Amino acid sequence: MKTHAPLPVGVPSAEAADLSLTIGRLTLKNPVGTASGTYGKGIEFLPYYDTSRLGCVVVKTITLQPRPGNPPPRLVETAGGLLNSIGLPNPGIEAYIEHELPKLRTLGAPLVINIAGHDAAEFAVLAARLERESGIDALELNMSCPNVAGGLDFSASPAAARDVVRRVRDVTARPLIAKLSPNVTDIRPIAVAAQEAGADAVSAINTFVGMAIDWRTRAPLLGRGLGGLSGPAIKPLALRIVWQLSKVVTIPIVGIGGVATADDAMEFLVAGASAVQVGTANYINPRAAIEVLDGLPERFAALGARCLKDVVGTLKMPV
Ligand code: RRO
Image (cartoon, rainbow, N blue to C red; front, side):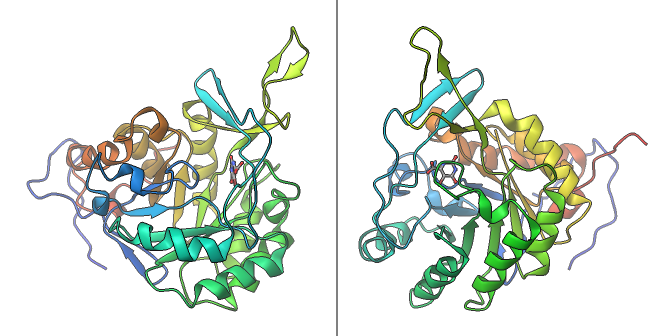
């Protein structure tokens, strides 16, 4: 690991900063990825920018069997946020491998496949099946889907989180990222359990359970009643959680929640994230992720930072 003498704040460095990081055995050239479920099938973004420049692309969750998803309406805009009840529609792992994986490989960015099982054992079945496929750089374990029965259970307690991660760890050497739910009283012991069970990173966070209501009809606006809230509205909550986690885990934290600009990304890095994922912003601006990335060098220079370590977790919290 390279070390650098710290530069005084405000002195721009002549050289572009080294933005790379490692997650398990995987080196990412920069900390900007796309958040699961917000990046279509990936190839939609090819006309907008060179997707190979991203730190990584994380795909929508895959399950063992095909799923139709939840009844519509599935999306509602709220003040500063987006409420979704998508319900994990996907073609199932076999059709996915046959039809989607080849297209995803054309994106050129490291590929993170996001998986979810009905139970802990099924997570391992999915991970084992993916062992036979090349061009997959890491797995993100969706232990926190708020919109399917039992989806939140996998990161609702340290024991549940430990079980899922351990079973998957037993079948793959691929880097594992445990995606955690914010819908818990205290996320910290859950992240620690994931780390102890062999996770190489934690993603913090998935969406917050919420609802939107039409008082005239007295009905919820989403087809399933409840949904997961994302977007700028949740950024302060996500920042708080990332900062809390940075005090208790040693593995990298991937910050998720309302990252739409390079300034948002810098806030997450300072709070303690080693990487970020851009999610809801992709729906507003298809170039959001690359614009976040392009904005980092000048911000690193403004801090006199030469590498990620000069920024990650450098928050000056009042004592
Ligand atoms: O598909 C969804 O409804 C969904 C998933 Br899998 C998730 O992890 N988080 C979310 O907000 N929605």
